[in-house]
Every structure is written in C-alpha cells, then in structure tokens.
Image (cartoon, rainbow, N blue to C red; front, top):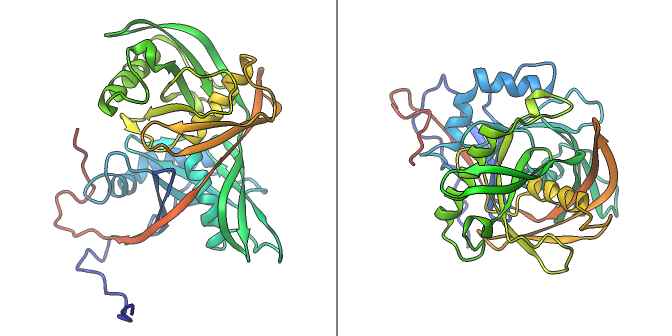
Length: 354
C-alpha cells in the first residue's frame, strides 16, 4: 500500500529567492524541464523581445535549471510567457546549455500534452479525439495536435511547423581535420547544417558519440566562420543552431533514416530532433526526393527513438519557397521538482563540466 504521508516541507533555503517549480518530461529521450512557478516576469512587447530580456536580465534562471547540480550539460527547458499573438494559447522561451533557441520540436510535442493536461487551453468537447494547441515559439506560431481521451492527453502529438526552407545546398566548407566537406543548410524554425557522417569518416550507427560530437561541432564552427546566415523575417533568427549528421539516406523509403543533432555548446539531442526533421523534410522536398504528404521516419542514433515527418503544403518565407511540415512523436512525463537556493551557496547559479 502506498504511504499517505504528507508532502515534505522544503529544506532550508533563501526566502528572498523564489522557489523554481518544474514539471519534467521527455520526448524520445530528450528532456524538457517546464517552469511552473518561480521565474520572475519576463518583460517585452513581443516574444523575441522577451527572449532578449531573459538573456540579458534573467539568465541566472536558465543556469540554475539547466546546469549542474540541478541539471546537466544536455538538459533542455521551457519558460512559458504571454504571447502578443491573438491566436496563441501560450508563448514559450526555450533554454539550453548555451542560451535560447528559436524553435524546439521535441519541446512542442511535450508542451502540447502539458498545455492540455494543465488547463492552458479550453477543455475539449466530449468525444474529441484530438485537441489543438497554438504555441507561439520565437520562430513563429506552431500548431500542435494532441491525441486525447476524456479531456486528457493520450498518445502521440503532431505539430505543423513554421515555413521551412533551404538556405544553401552543396556548400563547400573547409573543416579542420576533414578538409573540404559539402554541406546543406536548411531552416525548420532554426538553421542546421546537414552532412552525411560518412563524409567525415564516421558511421552514424556505430561511431562513438564523442567522435560524432567532435565532427559535428567542427562543421558547425566552420560554417559559422565561412558562411553568413540570413533570415528574411528577423536577425534574431539568423544564426546556425547546430549540425545534423545523417546516414545519407535522403531518397524516399519507408525505412527510417538515422541522424544525430549536435547543437548549442556541443549539446546532443537524444531524440531525432523535431526542428531538424522539419528542416530535413524541407531539404528533401527541395531536392525533389520527397512529395507532399509522403511520410518519412527519422531515427535517433543516440536512443533509437523515432519521429515521423511529412511536407503537408507549400508556403513562402520571404522570397524562399518553403513547406509546412508535420512532425509526430510521443512525449512522456517523468516527474516534478522544486528547486531552491541557499544564500551561502557559492555554486548557486550552477556550473558545467567539459
């Protein structure tokens, strides 16, 4: 029989520092720490302005939740904020080991469930099998569709992306230790460089994670140094988020294609990467390898978890031909926590080991 003991009181802590209450989830193995309470108000008239404000004034919140001893260098987080968009149910700022992302697909899949289960959207009508959740991400409005039963989330989630497009193909980049390497750059709410792992002398399925991380990071730094990223809507979105190494199986097949995403400060995505799947679908469609509504499966080389994706319709982003991509996956709850600070703790804001 389960114990009926009351929830224990908080241990000694600084009463002047808000307790950070969180819900933890994962999608395909990639963690998401959602802040329920304790984050100070994030000021700004737009979501991108709020993102800048948090970076400049509230970065200690990110460090306390993402870094050790409360997190780890591959932790990922979300702070929920009001949105200026009338159609949005919620706005979100994404946190990682280096800063703040413009998009995160695994987080959107998890937040769809969370928003429904925690009452952030109107309760679905009786008999509804799928609830709609409009999530304002820094890259724009993303719509999640949450499988539900009796008003609660139940099963997978899918989302429709912002317009995804290709910025460059067959770009030759001089990568230290690897020579000239051909890469593609595509946008799925964030920009990624794509390269076949074999071109770097690695097998995506059997290579050590450390070797994959080192190679992907070398590509990221080389692209940043040799190619200027532009986004037609905002300079806030014009940055390379990371590199995705693939098995090179870009032509359509019903078999999963495997990849691994290394982003931010050598952070490794445990999932197939929702925004990366979005960008990779856009790239395959751009190259004529995929038709509208052809579903592909994408497998994480880190955990073996799978997302599916398909281009559902054509769109535009500035002058770029783009597609709206549907990505599907399964998120799960893992727990809750309350994080405190003691005023004499010299590591109160966290640390990272390399």
